Length: 607
Ligand code: M6R
Image (cartoon, rainbow, N blue to C red; front, side, top):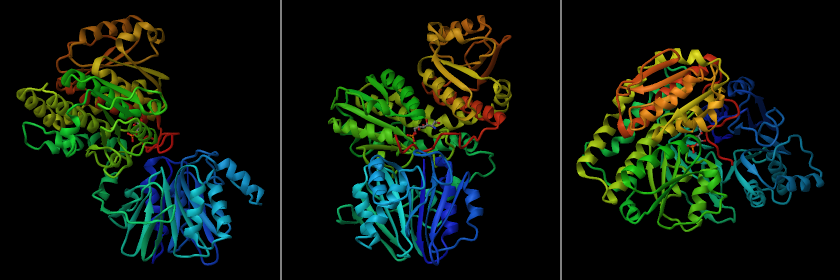
C-alpha cells in the first residue's frame, strides 16, 4: 500500500524523506515522488520504479519542508503523471487510501476551471485545497474544510509554497503518525520510517488534522476542536529492519522464527501454568461465559485462524468458526453477544479485518480480542483484549514469522480458554507449555533442511501448477504453502484437504503436476497415505514432508523429507517452515522480486 513521509525541520529534509520511503518500501508500491518548498516554487520529483531512482533524481533538491510518497496504484495506471505528489497552484498533496466521491468532486472542480493532469482521485484533493485557499488563506483551515468534504479512507500530507515551514496532515481510515524530533517534526505511515530521526511518536485518530512545523505540532478534530494525543516512545529496533547477511527479507524472516517464537512465548516465562491475564487484565472476566469463537482475518492470518480452530475445538471444547474478513463484513449474520471475536492481523491495519471487527462490534458483540504484531495498530486499539506477537517488523510481503508467532499465540489462547472452561488438567497444561517452550529449538532443526529443500525447489520451479495436500490441522498448512508459492514464485498453486482429491482435483494430476503433501504421523496419516497412492497411480510426482514418526517409504516418484521431530498438536508450526523455504527457493530460481511480489502490498489498508 502507499506510504507517506513528511517533514518540517531546520535542515535539509530530502535525505530524511528518501530514507523514510525506503523503510516503507516493504508495503509495496509502483512509483514514488516527493515535493519540497523551494526558493520560488514547489519543487517536485517523481519516478516510476524504485525509491533508489527517486533518490538519484532528487540529489540536487534541498529544503527544510517537504512531503514524499510511495504509490500503489488504485485509480490510474502506475506512471509518472499519476505518481504523487499532486500539485495545484502553490500547494502539493500526497495521499494514501481511496476517495470515494472523487468523481463528483472532479466534475465540480472541472466546472470551476481546474484542469486535471492525472487519473488519480488524489488530484481532486489538491485542487479542492487550492480552491478553498481562495476564501481562507490559512492552509490548516483550507485542508480542514477540504477533509470535511472527502468521503472514503485517506491519510494526506499537504504543503503550500506561500506558507513555508508548515505541513498539514490528516487521517481517516488510513494509518498516519507524527514523530517528534529535536530539530523538527515529522509524519509517516508507520514508525519504521521515522526511527532515523525520533522514537517519540503520536498516533493520530480518525478525523484528526495536525500541523507540523519546525517548533512543534498541534492537533484538532475536523470540526475545529483542539485535541491532545499521547506521546508513545517506540520500542521498534532500527536494526530489526536491516537485511544483514540475508539475500532477502523473506529469507531473513524465515530464519528469525526461532527467535520470534522465543520472544512471543517469553510471556509464559518459566511457569508451568498460564493465566488469562496474558490477553489483558479483563480476560478472565470476559472469557468466562464465552460460548463460541469467531475468528476474522485475511490471507495468511486467516490460515492461522483455521489451524487454531482444530485446537480450540479439540482441546478447549469450544465451537469455533473462521471467516474471511471481507466476507463477514458484508454478510447478514446472526450476532451472538457471548461469542468471542478474534481479529488476527500481522499489521493490525488490514482494512477488511478492521472493518469486520467494527462490524462485529456494531452487532453488539463486545468480547473482542486482537492477535497482532503491531501494538499501536488500529485493530489492537479497537479490541477489548490483545495479544501482541513479538515477531519484530516483517518486511517481506510474504508473511512468515508473523504466521508462526500467531500460531503460538493461538495455542496459548486455546490453553487459556480450555482452562477457563475446566477442560485442562494441570499435567496436560504443563506438558503443552513444555512443548511450546521447546518450539524455538525444534524450528531451528527444521531450518537445517534448507539445502535439501533447495534441491526440490529447483526440480519444480519450471512447472506451471502445483497441488498441496494436507489433512486435519495440516490442511490450513497446505493452504498456506500454496499461498506462499503462488504469491512469490507466480506458480499457480492450490491446496486441498487430501480426502477431497477424488471429488474433482484428481482430474488435474499427471506427470506435470507436482503434488506437495504435509504428512506428519498423526491419526489421519493412514488415510493420507491412501490419498497419496491415488496421486501416484495417476503418474503424479509426490513431494512429501513427513516427520520423525511417519512411516512412508521413499520410492520412484515419491520424494521424502523428514522433519527431525514429531510434534503432536503443535506440528503445524513446524510443518509450515519447509513450505516457506520451498516457495522462497522456487522464487529464487524463477528470479522474481521475492520481497515485493508483483501486484501485492504488505499492508492492505484499502478494501
Ligand atoms: O496484516 P495482515 O495479517 O492482516 O495481512 C493479511 C494478508 O494481507 C496477508 O497475510 C497476506 O495474505 C500475505 N501477503 C500472505 O503472505
